[in-house]
Structure formats: structure tokens, C-alpha cells
Length: 296
Image 1 (cartoon, rainbow, N blue to C red):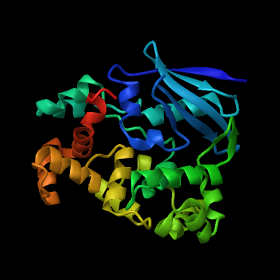
Image 2 (cartoon, one colour):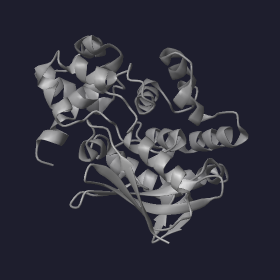
Image 3 (cartoon, rainbow, N blue to C red):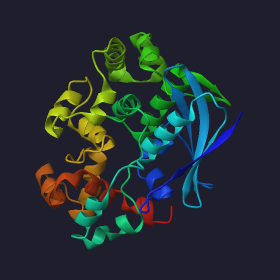
């Protein structure tokens, strides 16, 4: 039976700013209806292999979650929705840091800063690997192929994000030919096998007591994860020490702060050093400002 759940939100929360904070809203199983401001996702219960297609939106100061069925327990859906939208993340200190820069005043005004993420670190890790050394168009193709070819059917033409077990079963040529994963193909298999065997537990990174440099080193032990991928994933874990510089962020910085001239990374690092442990979130907000201020 369909059902509806309601979630209270903090005062400085914006559903639109959170959904548009990150390209994840364009990657399956997420689907965004930006005319009606509905974010779809397929919720999963790994324990029983059940799936519930759902739609999230904001209404009367609450997040509404409409589910197609009752297969996934309410408590699991509520926890996943809170995690996806980062409802429990306290950005008070971050907003305080932004008072040092009038140009970033829009962030707190629009209640921005919460970066959309997946309900599992596993999904975020795989998606991050799909963003390395390629165009965003190819990233979307790879993720769509993974979901539609390896994800469990959830009804209504929807598929869940594939489990590590499902990905570990497939040969390398499948990833090259069917997923279009290129050099990532053996990396996906090795990663999936490490997770299914218990050798690697990405979910433990959420509450790891390791320092950020130590945790970054652990993430980089995953083949295909360099500095950019590790620091990007760290942002989704709530650690913003690293800038996660890639070609896109660098090019945006050159345009906005360096008269369109190429500069070394040290200059970029110095520019955001005043934000201390929030510098990775500061650069992300700074470089994505037009997403929120150009009328989208």
C-alpha cells in the first residue's frame, strides 16, 4: 500500500538548495522533477532485499516522503531521507565563517551548504569513481547503466542502486562493454569483492575515529581513488578539509578569481585557507553560486 511520511526540518534548511547542491540529483536512482520540485529515489532495505520507489518534496515546513509500497520499513526510509538531505548536519559554524566574505553571504541567505548524497557510502563511492577523468555526460551514462543493468527492479520501471554482491558477480568485459566503464572496469570488480568479503566497509567511514588525513589515505587505498575522489567523498562524509580539486573546479576558480588565467593549486588553497576545516565546502559553494542565483 502507498504511504506518506513527514519529516521535521531545521530552520536553516532549504529543500531546493540541498537538491541543487550537487549533481547527484541527476544520477539514478535519483530523478529530479524541477518543475514540481519532486526528488525521486528508490529506497532499499539490504536486510530483506525489498525496495520502495519514493518521492520527496517540501511542504509546510516539512519534507514529505511518498512511497509506492510498504516494503521498506518506515524507520529505514526516514533515516535514509534524513541522511540524503543531511538534515542532521549543523552548519552554524560554517555560516559564521562566511561572514568573513560578503560575496558568500548568499549561502546562508539561501540556506545552502548541504550537499546532497546517497543513503549509503557504497553508492557515493561508486558514483564518485564514475566522475573521474571523464565528462559529466559519461558519468550519467555509466551510473544509468549500472542501475538499469545491475540494480534490482523496484516496480514502476524503477531500479535500486546495485549491491556490491551484484557488481562482484559480473566479469570485466561486462563493465567495459555494457557499462562503458573503461579503465574502471577491474576497479569496480575489486571494490565490490572487497566489500562483499568484508575486507572493506565503506559505511564505517561515516563514524570513523581516524583523522581526516588518515581516513583520506584509507579511501585512497581503493583503486581509482586519487586525491580528488577521496576529498570529494570526504565532503559527502561531512569532512570538508580538502578542496577536491578537479578540472571543473579549477577552471571555475580561474574564471572567477584569477582573470581566467591558469594558476597553481597552492594559490587556490591560500584563497580558501581562512575557512579552515570548512574550506572544501566554501570552494564548492563559491564555484556553484550561479546554480542558485541565475534563476534556475
